[in-house]
Length: 618
Image 1 (cartoon, helix red, strand yellow):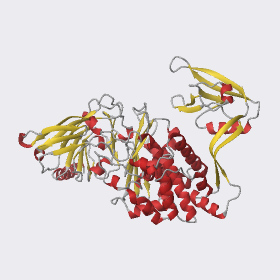
Image 2: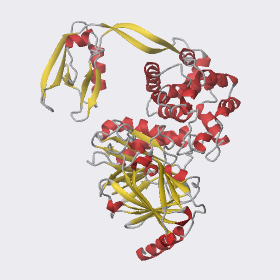
Image 3: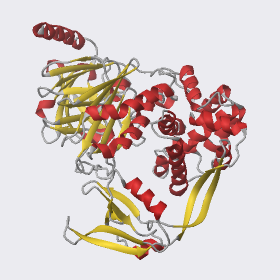
């Protein structure tokens, strides 16, 4: 059987390579200094001159990275010894002549995760989930757009990737057209758009599969210190995936989906962690912490990326459907692509019982507060989206995950109020996906009108005024539809924990004071200092899995004048050394200003009850 498989694979491979395709060869066993040599037998060209391009940008990144920066030693050989002249036009583009006589192209590609010595690289670091990492004999995390190029205007041909790999390595990917071998694999995609939409992670396999209806969900994991594994991730995501299936009407719109997780055990070059979505997969670079500490983060980030199977896969504008990789034009509707996706990621968890309505509201109100404090609340969201690549506008981009999600919540509540609970954003997204779909794009200027036709004139007015216009969201009016009073700011006299800004130190597994600027009078009495790591509160050890209960008990039992003791580890001058200290102060109430407070109205109308019930899934 083994010999038969080899013969079949060889025959199929020879048939593929005989066709008019991009035929790429990559040898993963010969990585040197985090570099790989790529060779290409190109499709047949008729023209005398042709431009070979590497992407300046790809969908989902919202930033021009110029992946040609990571290419070197670009050369081409001609048929029958004919000399091919190569002229580098810009960082991403090479002009070749005579193009119709090219036999092979070769070049070297560098990974992106640890490079600062290439031109313009230090100031334009590629966010790791959108880049590439080569670790010889360990892991190859491949975002295909950083490795493979194309001839200008010739994107709609098959791309055949032949990987020579270390023995035992396995490619985790959302792609299905794969011929596996002991030392070589052949992966086929149908055009360049599909290629850049398909990351691949090669390593010794740590995989798990979850069957969600008829959809096969593959989880691939690389954890260098084995702190987390694919089975744990699959079990963590399983309930979420079923909740998302139900949220989408009982059926997922893809046959196969892959989660690619790389857990990094050092700081990333970008200083960030996260994920990049694709139509049939998503790629994650997250800190390698103890698995229990990552559980909810895994759910939240995965829920967001997974919901991109709706948009932009099945709902997208012409700017995405006909994406120009070297002269990218941005869509007006990041509120739809990212904002609605972020909202659905949290809303689905609440409706599915993984979290609850209180957590959903708290999350949305925190996002609303972030949008007010960190971003321009009167900037038109559609205008920002369209101009997001402008250096002056780009700092507003992250508001798509803050205000963009709140736009989704407002839209959902208004729809349920207008329809007596019968129609919400879940229904709207399904209707838009039916009208458009994977192979049909909408015109940006038509979207609001299309949504209005599916819904109500009031919804069209809301989108034009609050998303396309400059007016801040009517958050008080919207929340009143579900019987919730909203207070922008309130002053209270209450007990506190001192008010230092806290973070988590994964090395010591303790909360750490990162800022004392906003401490209240009680915090000053305790005399926290920046760098203090919290060990015990009133004699009870603060562990990551019991902090909520200990703090809750602290507030419930505290009385004026009680002695409060906080044992802390304070860093010494010598790195990695601490001194154990006990901070003491008498409990006293302090003035605390709370922003964006909500409270359920004492008496709800039948209309409010219905809207709340259908929105929250109660």
